Image (cartoon, rainbow, N blue to C red; front, top):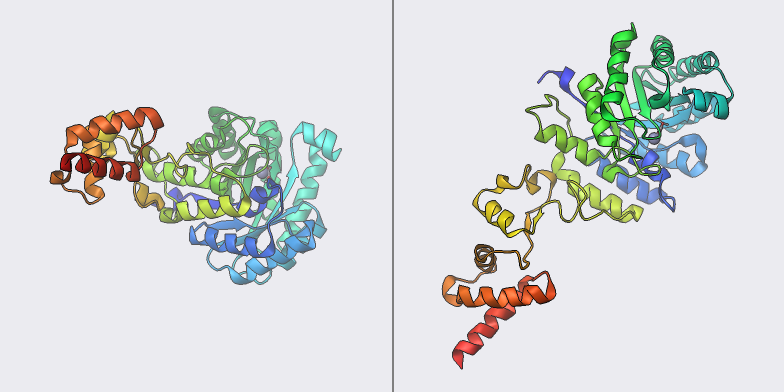
Length: 390
Ligand code: KIV
Ligand code: ZN
């Protein structure tokens, strides 16, 4: 596939994700997570907001010095002091990016910044030019782009590209848009901004309506080539677009989405669990890709199907995301084929038990306790053999 079809993955677990935590991560924890995120082979990792505190500055600096591979990025408002802090913290990185932003929606301009769009544009242009003194790789974001009139958005994006921004990020800051609406914003930018081919379009979707991933996919179809996301979708309020979901959608639906990422998907499960543990953010059991139930089958019909051909009820394999195997939950809905299969996995041969009898005992137990575990099956076989001896 041509490089035009590559989707850049910009991870912001350590910046937008970290903003959502009850307690700040320690310096050591940030470095540990940064290495895990680098192992995922993301293209860019945004690792902090250096001007915000001396601790954040030090972490960004340490990550810039020790993490190799991805571009290391820091966030800054469109303020010279922020950009200087970013430039300084990132100076030892193998490859660095400064990400600067200003709000563009009428609501934010009027109430938060008390500026006109023209004033915000001038400020953005000056800051992008200032950031270019530190690096050629400057990203500019139009905060609250999802609620910015399209002509205003086109005007500021054109000016930002002219000033030297090489990535233009379109955030749906408050997770307000719906997929075809957000896709339309991207396709209008692609058609209306005359110098758009000099920049990569990026999107940064929040999940307030549960649409962050869907909106990001819609944006790709409209021309975006970078997705900003976080491991497990952690981030402000309801979170950000989830990295693992986007990566696996693109990998699994290549038939319909002719794009690719360079994510090493077998690292997904490990990094997801590390983020969950270190950030004290539990993963809901039914979370796509990484939840405890994502590759667990409970219905007897499904279990039977999966034993015959895995793809009857699995659209991707657990191994692809770094999970050793799928799971067949033994409950009163499980059929006898599954019980026999599990007993074989546990090392029993057919001569060791009577399947009809074991299955009846299993159903009685399952009705009483719900899920039946391997040690329960072991006990059932043991008691059956004890009775046979009497
Ligand atoms: O949600 C947002 O708009 C942001 C920007 C700083 C990119 O996080
Ligand atoms: Zn955000």
